[in-house]
Image (cartoon, rainbow, N blue to C red; front, side, top):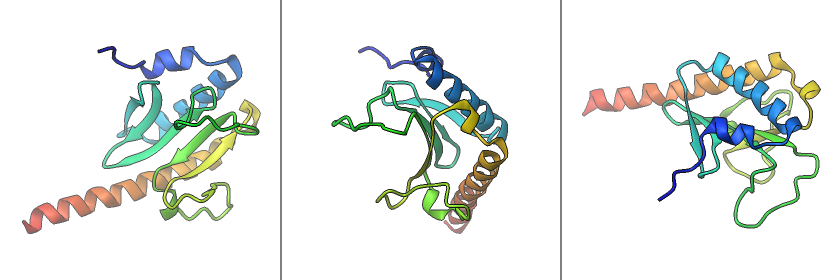
Length: 143
């Protein structure tokens, strides 16, 4: 059985515009979430970042999302937060779009990436993930 692509292989397969955005987001995530593990999911090499639970992911529009392809008009690269429903989202940059848990933001050019805004979101996502880790530790102590 053929193993899926690695994250690096997946990034190399992207069109140049998507590749630049994904590389920048990946660098920010690796900088802000040093304890997180990067995994390539869905056999496509879609980068997901996990520690206690899934924290976030980068989904380029070149990768099909689900069984039925949806038009990605105005959505070149998605930065998704797996526990987005627990985030403050004070500036409203994260969109639920009918989802209960995963909230996303869309980036269409390298110039749209606001490093500080994304760092704040990543640090908040990391704090939420740490809370899940604390809950696991407490439940083990009680047993």
